[in-house]
Every structure is written in C-alpha cells, then in structure tokens.
Amino acid sequence: MDARTPDAGETKGRNGANATVDRLIARPSPWLDASGAHPAIVLSTRIRLARNLRAVPFTHRAREDELKQVIGSVERAATRASSFGGGAFLSLHDLGNVERTVLVERHLVSHELSDASRPRGLYVAPDERIAIMVNEEDHIRLQSLVSGLMLGEAWSLADQADDELDGSLEYAYHDEWGYLTACPTNAGTGLRASVLIHLSALVLTKQIDKVLKGITQMGLAVRGFYGEGTDVMGNLFQISNQTTLGLSEKETLESLERVTRQILSAEERARETLLRDAKTQIEDKVYRAYGTLRYGRTMSSQEVVNLCSAVRLGVALSLPELPPLATLNELLVLTQPAHLQRRLGKVMDPAERNVRRAELVRTILVRGGDGTGEGHRG
Amino acid sequence: MTCQICNKNPATVHFTEIQDNRSSELHVCQACAQEKGLAPQGGMQKFSFSQLLAGMVDDMATGEEEKVGPVQCPRCGLHYTSFKETGRLGCPDCYATFQAKLRPLLRRIHGSTRHTGKHPATESESVARTRQVQRLQDELQRAIDREDFERAAELRDLIHQSDAAESRQGRPAADRP
Image (cartoon, rainbow over all chains, first blue to last red; front, side, top):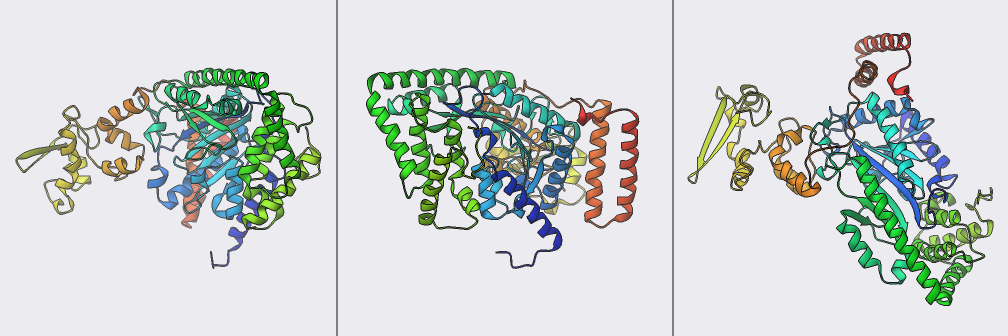
C-alpha cells in the first residue's frame, strides 16, 4: 500500500513492534489459563477505565500532532509506572493487518483501535494482564484482564495503574460529572467491568432469553465474544455494566458480581437438570464435538468455537478423557484467523486456513498444550 | 447573568434576533464576543447569528431548557448538532458548554448526573512535581519535533533540575506503592 521506502526510524519501529507481537504470540494469553474462581463457567474478567487528557480535544477532534503528543505522554507515564513493569509500546501504524488483528483476537485492542489510519497505540505489560489503548475513542482506555470471576483482583490492577498514570498525567475531570469522556455514556467513573461467561446449559434448556432479558432489566448489557457489536458464538456472553454516573466503582462491581453469581447458579442448575434428564444426549453431544475437533480435517474458526463450547460443557460436568479447560481456552484464540496466519507465517485464503486450523487443533489436543511442543502447564 | 459561551464572566454583550416573529437572544461576555468575532466593533462578517441560534431556538421551544448554552463549543468548535449525529463530544470543555442539554441526557442514560466514584489525586507536592516533569518532557518532545534545539536544551536543563530536586526529597510520586 505504502509505496515509499521506509526510513531507518520507521523500519526500527516496525521491527520493534513486530518483535513485541512475536513475544506475545509465543505463548497463550495468560487470561486464558483457567485460573481464578469458577473458571469452567466464567472465562475471564475485564475492567476498562476511560480517561482523557485535559489539555487535548477528544481523539476524533484532535489533530494528528496532538494525538502524537498524547502517545508520547502516555508512553512516558506508563514507563514510569510500576504496574506496567517491563511493558512495551506498540504503534498500530507499525503493524501489518495480520499483526493488528492478532491484538484484537487476544482482546488487547478493540476493532476501533486496530484501524491505524490515525496515531494510535497499545502499551502492554509483559503478562498482558494490564494494557492501555491509546487514542481509541478516549485518549486512554486502561484495561485489566484476568482469568475466572475475579472482579476484585481485576479492579485492583486497573485502579493501581490508574493512580500511577494520574501521578504523571492531568486527566479531564469535573467534580459533578467525574472523568470526562468523548461519549457521555462513559462519563463519571469511565468504568466498564465485564465478565466473559459460558452459558451452554441455559442455551440448551432454552432459558437463555429469559436470563438475558433479566440481565438487561438489571441495567447490565450483554454482548458477544469480541465485545460491542459482535455476535454471540460458542454460547459465550460478555456481561457488563452500563451505568457510569451516580454509582461508585465499588457499587458497580458489587452489582455485576451479584448478577453474575445469580446467572452462574442458574447455569449450574440447568447443568444438573441436563445431567439428570438427558445424560446420554449430553455425553453424545460432548464426545461428538471432541471427536470432530480431534479428527476433523477442515474447520472454520466459528466451528472450533462452537465445538469447544460443547467440550467445555463436558469438562465442567467432569466427563472423562477430555482436554483441560486451559487448552480449550487457548484453542479459542490460537485458531482465530490472524493467529493462525501469523503462526504459519503466511497469508492464506479461508479454505487453506480451515485445513491448517484443523491440523493445529489436532496438534494442540494431542500435545495438550499450545501446539509449540514446548509443554504446557496443564 | 453569566456568559453563555464561557459560563464564567458576566454577560455584557446582548444580541437579539427577530425572525418570523420569533425572538432569540444570546448573552455573552466581552472577551468571548471578541474571540468569536461577535463584538459590535467589527468582525461581524464572519458571524452567522442565525446559524448559531438555530439549535437554540429548537431548544427554547422545549421550555425547560431555556438556559441552553451556545450551540458551538468555544474551545474545539464542535456544534451541538454534530454531537447529536455522532454521540461524541469534542473536548472536555464541551461538557460545560452543553451542560444544559447534557444534564437531562446524562440523567436519561445513567439515572443520575452526579459522580460518586474515585477522583484524581489532589495536587500534593510530589504529584505536582511529577506532572511538572511530564509537562516539561512533553514540551521537550515538541521542541525536538520542530527542531527548536535552543528551547530543547533549556527544557532539558529544567528537567535535570527537577529530577535533582526530586532525588533530594525522596522517591517520585509515581513510585509510591
């Protein structure tokens, strides 16, 4: 696309950014390691804090040089902060399409940020548990991401990082309206707390619509696997708060925790019902899915996600001879199109990807790890 | 009456436009009037009064929101109509500019208009110093970008001085546990 010969600085930036992506992709995302509370049903917990610098217009109204200033300021502040110890800054501009999508697939950046037409960046700690999207809708989208239902821990990580950044940066803040954000739906705490939850039994027993309706009536939002505007796949739902003004962070987290635990109980009850009334049918569904993953020769990423959902249900029901949860979690991300292409080092059409994906799934399931042959913490 | 643009100074310049038997008013301070080219002593040609009031007339018709602010943010130039289209405000000052409109909107979205959560650290001495260093570093980068090396050297010295003061007085704020 870019016909210019890149100068030395640009080449250095690209090499550095690509090396960082290589380091990230060399191991599974830590938030997928199936640690934390209730990992069979709650895959992960995420906290996002929206912040803006007082002196600069919001991203969509700022000039390019102002956005570059924001990147510089945030990078310096993050480098100074112990929360991001040993972290790295990536300019989205320095990355190719595949690499940018890798970051989206790892839930490190949003689709909006991955559009590199304006100066945007990602500052990410080595363990990926804490990261900053720079110049997304807001200048700073600080996020923490941990495995399992761990709202308290995810909040502590984000809160501490936020305090550290606040020590260096002047946030846009108003006594009445709190942290000021580009969209008034985020003003106040700027907090979006969410859990990624697997509700397969509620879907199978056709109770999901009622549950989802209840969630929205509680003032919470439900989205798909990849966040806003994405479809639900593999019975994975993201549940998050909507309100950011008038509720403190503590109240917001408590409310999400309370509702999540209610949904968790409903899912567990539905699983017990399935096991009692339809054990053979459930076992058949689980092992057919596992058989397809284990021996299939071509499959789309959507199919992998759906098959993993069935196997995951089996693992949660303690059915024997199934892979560990962490392996199933890793499959969700490692088999996504950009991860697959980056791993194999070439751009492929969907048909070729489906064949290579099936190979990778087999390799991972046989080795019980991330397919690198380097073992797995299991 | 305070200025409808900055919401700070008293409004000393008053405009009234009568169109189709409807009167619209705008009350601003001298400084804002001059900045926006509204001052009576010239500069009127750039000013489209009806354009500025278009949204306000609409608002005034709604009764309760009579004290609606200007329809364009004095800092970033965002028009309220643009916000209505995109749902995004232009800068932190837009909140004050459009507050009369935003309050009911925020209440509709959140059920409240008052923040009760955490707030930035107050400017303790160490926080102020760290932010000052960051400001100097930001300015240094800008000076380097525009190849103003004389200014860059000055800024570098200032940063060194601040760092030295910091290490004399203990660890920087950002290193607090």
